[in-house]
Amino acid sequence: MDQIRVLLVDDHPAFRAGLSALLKPVREIAIADEASTGEQALALVGGVQPDVVLMDLAMPGMGGVAATERLVRDHPHIRVLVLSMADDDDSVFAALRAGARGYVLKGARKVELVRSILAVHGGEAIFGPAIASRLTGYFTGLARREQGFPELTAREREILILMSSHLTNPVIAERLGLSGKTVRNHVSSIFAKLHVADRAEAIMRARESGF
Amino acid sequence: MDQIRVLLVDDHPAFRAGLSALLKPVREIAIADEASTGEQALALVGGVQPDVVLMDLAMPGMGGVAATERLVRDHPHIRVLVLSMADDDDSVFAALRAGARGYVLKGARKVELVRSILAVHGGEAIFGPAIASRLTGYFTGLARREQGFPELTAREREILILMSSHLTNPVIAERLGLSGKTVRNHVSSIFAKLHVADRAEAIMRARESGF
DNA sequence: CCACGCCCGGGACATTGTCCCGGGCGTCCA
DNA sequence: TGGACGCCCGGGACAATGTCCCGGGCGTGG
Image (cartoon, rainbow over all chains, first blue to last red; front, side, top):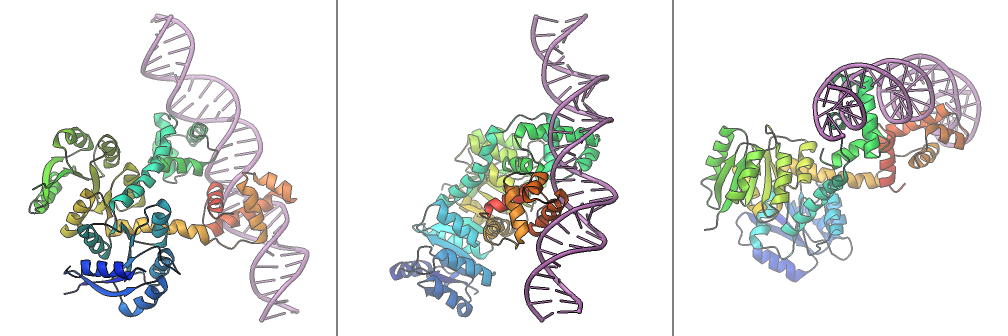
C-alpha cells in the first residue's frame, strides 16, 4: 500500500516512543526505524531507505543541522522534516540552510504533524505556525527596509524596474524609445536618490523593496 | 461546522469555476466569494470575512503581489495562499515579501491544494514542490556562499580586499605600485572566478564570506 | 628542459557614471 | 496671464569600468 517510510531521529527514547505510538495508527505512514543520534541516522539511511526523516536538532554529538546537511547532500531524494523544540531564528534558518524541507515544533498537534509529513513526502515545504511567522517575518522584514525608499519619478521607477532585469542602458533606451544618453542621466539621478554609487547596489535595493 | 471560508481571486472566470467545482465537495472548505481583480478582492474582504484568500498573481490592474501586500497589512488575520502559474524566483520571492503564507502552482493536484489550504488556515506556511525547491535553493545557496569561496591567487585576494574598501582601480594600482591596466585585468579575472559581473557584487560576496 | 601558472602590462573596444549644458512641456500659484 | 518649478529629453566632455585579445618575465615541478 506504499506507506511513507519515516525514520525517527531523536535522542530521547521516550519521545521517540510517544511519536511512534502517535504515528502508528496513521495508515499512510510507517515508522521504518529510529535513531538516537545524527551519526546513527546517517549510518542507517542507506539500509533503511526512508522517504522522510523526522529530525531533532538538539542531540549529543553531531547535531541535527549537521546531520541534515550531510543527509541531503548524500541522499537528495530523502526529505528532512525538522521536529524540534527550538523556536528561534538561529535554529530555524540553520536548518533551512542545511536543506530541511520543513520545520515543526514539538508539541504540534497530530493533524499538523501528519499533514507536514505528507506534504514533505510530496516534495512540498511546510512550516508550523510559529516557524511560518519567522519565515514571513524574514521576507517581509526585507521589504520593510523599503519604507525609507526615496520618491522616484515615474520615468525613474520605470527605468529602475528595467535595470532590475539586468538590462543594459542601451537596451533600456531602445525599449523605451529613448536616447541612451537620457537613460544614463536618469540612472544617474536614481543613484543619487538611492544613495548608492552603483548599478548593482541599486538593483539590490530595488529587489529588497519588492520592486 | 466551521468550514474554512475561502475567497477565490483570479481573472479567469473559467478557472475560478473549475476551482470552485473542485473545492465544493471538500467538507472542510467553503467558497465564500470570488473576485476577478486585486481591487475587487480588497473591496470584498471586509464584507466576506474570508479565512484564506486563494490569490492569483498575474491579473490586470493591481497584481496579486500588491493585493497581497495590502491585504495582509490591513487584515493580518487573513492568510494568503498564492495559486499562480508563475514558476520563477522573482514571482515567488515577491509574493513572500508581500506576506503570502503559501505558494502553489496552478496544476497542483487536488490533494495538494486542499492540504495547502488547510495548512495555511492553521497558520502554517506551505509551498508546492517546485516552489519548495526554490526556497531551499535560496537558503542552501546562501550557505554555499558562506563557505565555498573560489580559490584566488595571492594578488587577486590582495586586490579584492582593497576593492572591498571601495577603492578605485587607479588608487589600488598606485597603492600596489602597479599599472592601472594590470589591476583591471586582475579585477576582471576575480569577477570570472566569483561568477559575478560587477564590482559591487564581488564586494558583497567577499563580505558575506568574511573576507 | 619545458610546460604551466602566476604576474605584469598594452591595445582596442563598449559600457558605465558624472557634471555640465539647454530646450520643451505641464502644473500650480501669484 | 505670466512666471516659477519640476519632469522629461538629450548633447558634450570626461573619467572610470570591464572584456578579450596579445606578449613577456619568472618560478616550480615533472
